[in-house]
Amino acid sequence: MQSAIAAQSGLPMSDVDPFSLEYIMDPFAAHEQLRNLGSVVWLNKYNVWFLTRYEEVHAVLSNPKTFCSSKGLGLTNYYFEKPWRAPSLLLEADPPEHTKRRQVMGRVLSPANIRKLREGFEQEARALIDRLMEKEIVNGAKDLSEAYILKVFPDAIGVSPEGRENMLKYGLMVFNAFGIHNKIFEDSVKDAEPVISWIMSCCERDRLSKNGMGELVYQAADAGELPQDEALMLVRSFLSAGVDTTITAITNILYAFTQFPGEWQKLRANPALARQAVEEGLRYETPWHHFCRTSTEETTIAGAPIAAKQKIMLSIGSANRDPRKWDNPDVFDINRIAHGQLAFGTNIHGCVGQMLSRLEKEVLFTELAKRIESIELAGEPTRVVHNTMRIRSNLPLKLKFAAKA
Ligand code: OVV
Image (cartoon, rainbow, N blue to C red; front, side, top):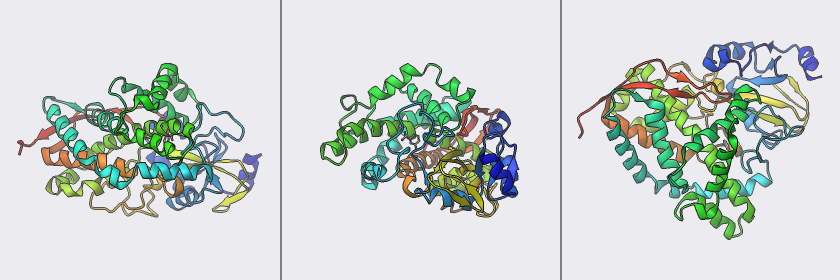
C-alpha cells in the first residue's frame, strides 16, 4: 500500500483537500502550510504526493520521461482507468508520439504567424473598450475577458462566430477533469453531449475558415507531416487549451490590479510594461492551479519513495508563490521580471500557444492602460467552484475612463 510506504518514510502527511470548497475559495494559506511542511507532502485523502515548492514542481515538469503525461493530468490514472474523453494527442501524450505533433503545432503557432495577429487584436481591444464606456459597472470576467477572448481566439483559429459560448462549457469539463471525478466534474459534464458535438464539428476542415490556424494544421497533414486523422484532434487541442486559460488569466490580472492600485498607475504611466505585468499576473494568481504527472518507473522525489504508475500532484499556483524562489511572492509587482513563472508549464509540454496567449493579453492591457485611469472593485467577485482553475464568473469593476486621445 502506498499510504503505508508514505507513513514509513517519515515524510509529512496532510489532511488538506485541494478539491474542498474551502481550498477552492482560498488555497493560499494551505499552500504556505504545505510548503512549510516539506518538499513533498502526502495527501491522506487522495493517497498521492503533493508538490507545492517551486524547485520540486520544476524538477518533475523537467523530467517527462519519469513523470509522464500520457496517463492523464487528473487523478484518473490511464494505466488503470478509462479517460472521460479521447485523450489529447498533445497534452496527454509522451515522446515519441508527442514530438512530431508538438513540432507541427509549434510551427503553426510560430512568432511570424502570431505577429500577423497583433493589429486585429488591437482593433478588437479598442472596440471592446469603447463599448465598455456605456456601462456603469463592468463585469471584468464576462464583459471584458470573455468578450475579448471569445472574439479574437476562435477568429485566429478559424472557428465560425455562432455558438462560441459552447467553448466555455467545454472548457469547464476539460479543466475540471484535470482534477478528480467528483461532483464538481459531474456537474460540468451534465449536458455534455451537444457541447462536445459542437466542439468536434468545429474542428472539421470544411467548417474552419481558410485563413485560420486550424487550416494550417490540416495543411501540415496534407504535406505528410502528420497522419491525416490527427489533424482534427490537434485542432481540438486549440479549442480545449486556449479559451478558459486566457480568459481566466485576464480576469485574474484585472483582479490583481484592483488589489494593487499603485501597479495600475505604473502601467498607466508606461503601457510598455504590459508584457511584464502579464507575466507577473500569471505568477501572482496562476489560472490553471494544479494538475498531475504519472510516474513511469520507481523513483524518488526529495527522498520520497515513488512507486511506478503513481500520480504526483503539482501545485503550479503554489510554486509561483514560493518564497524560496520569489521575493515578496504575495505582492503583485509589475516591475518584477517574473521570468521562470510556471503558469505555462515548462519543458516538452510547456504551453505551445504561450506566445499567442501573451500577445492577446499584452495587447488588451496596453489598450486598457491607454484608456483607463483607474480600476476599482465595485462589489464582491463570484468564484466558480472548479477543480483546477482559479476562475471568477463575476468581477464587478468600476473603470474610470480617460478622455479619448
Ligand atoms: C494545455 C491543454 C489544456 C487543455 C487541453 C489540452 C491542452 C488539449 O490538448 O486538449
